[in-house]
Image (cartoon, rainbow, N blue to C red; front, side, top):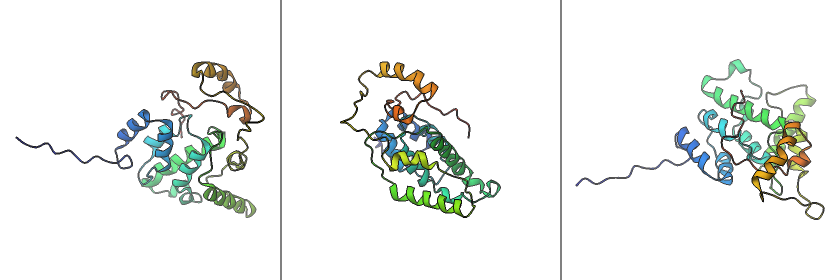
Length: 207
């Protein structure tokens, strides 16, 4: 009787995009954030990162780490027409993440640490140097938005204010939906619960 030899299982980082997406749609939010922090940018990342980076559970710190992992300096001063075809997908994905970063889409979750502070600061220092020298790169991060992470501007003061998280998912969503549509300060948006519905995302955003 022939023996059935198990096929080697690909790791999540080397799995096909459809397998990676299946994993991301079924894993926890913490697992998804951990996955994208270690994502391999060597191929075209748009199919996988294009979906997961449009999810509302992605926080600002994770988004900045993913952005910097994509090595945006490779394309920062390169004319778009000169970008090699095999790298065009990575450049466009960086465009998309940068757009969401600067629009305020990614929020700071209360009490989350900054894991990539040195790299973020180096990028902002380069931006400042470019500004002084009259040079402009392709990817310019909004320092005011990044400061909400670096300076802990949205960190909860538990002695001064209280908030209720996830006690009633549907009720909180009903309460916040008109606020999110009209637009309010980021101080209020920090209490918006993470998105859990995989169908409720911004993957229709064109980039």
